[in-house]
Image (cartoon, rainbow, N blue to C red; front, side, top):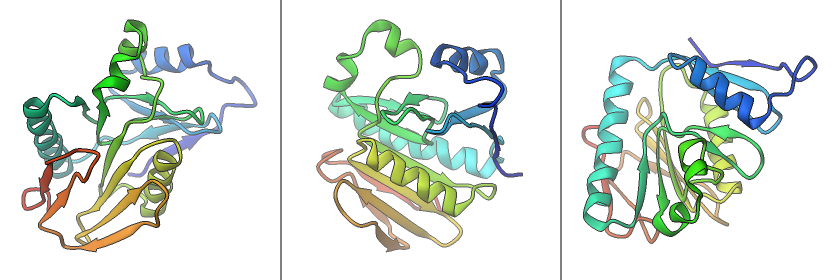
Length: 191
């Protein structure tokens, strides 16, 4: 099953509040919204992908608990990007100063910012092309570092501000570089 994109714009253009409420009223479904306002209905992931997503988020969370440099989010966390899209990366991180600049209300809804760091773990139902476009969107909206992990090909595409995408074949670890200082993602449990 792949994601389904639905365009309701000729009938109704959902406000941010309406989109948020739609997500709350349908908590068993995962929605995203692209910059054109089209609704993307995301299928649930299978057991293997879900397990690997949990391991990925756990590694980032443990590092952040030690450093206290920001806030870590799992695949349920929604972000309102500057281009108007509402996205939920598989794992993400926001620098503490940026998170603390948000109001309490902004923190309880879809945070109106792009994470500093994002990860998408390509699942069997994901389109590589669509996920690459999503990674470019994160980068274009302010993500300083992003990883697109393709388990099937054992490749990682690394997205950085102002740089071409770097493709790494079968890495053992990935560095958080200067965005997540001292962090290394160990991929053995992700592959």
